[in-house]
Structures are given as C-alpha cells and as structure tokens.
Image 1 (cartoon, rainbow, N blue to C red):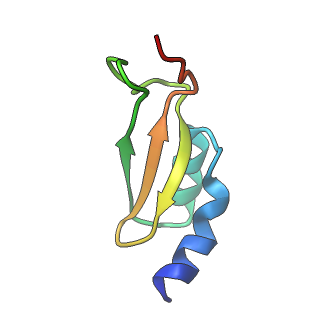
Image 2 (cartoon, rainbow, N blue to C red):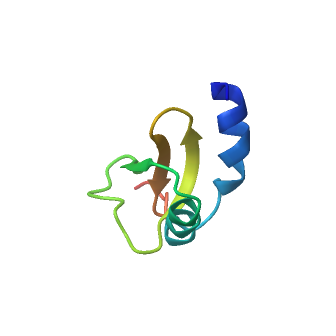
Length: 73
C-alpha cells in the first residue's frame, strides 16, 4: 500500500476524540504513535479531551493531537 493510500485510509480520524481514534486503531491492529502540539504560550496540550488534528502516514501511523482550546493571550 502506498503512503498516499495509507493516509487516505485513516484521514477520516481527523477531528475524532483521541480516545475513540486509539480504540479504533487498536481494534484494527494498526501500529500508531501519538504526538502532541499546543497553542503558543500554552504549558501543555496533553488532556483527556484531546482531538486528532492531523494524521501522518508511515510505520507507525502518527496521530497529531491537541486540546480543543487554542486561545492565545
């Protein structure tokens, strides 16, 4: 499977809550990793209510996640 096809297969996860995305990928036996991003001047984005904001193809599949609050002071 090409990288473009792999991305297209999982791009629907963008916007999913992280917990649901992880559950789905585990059910499908897909290797994945989670990386975090945050708004400028925020201490951390690692929160229970995180969402998938991007998917990167590769092995393992990478979920880029962030908290929904992106307000900037």
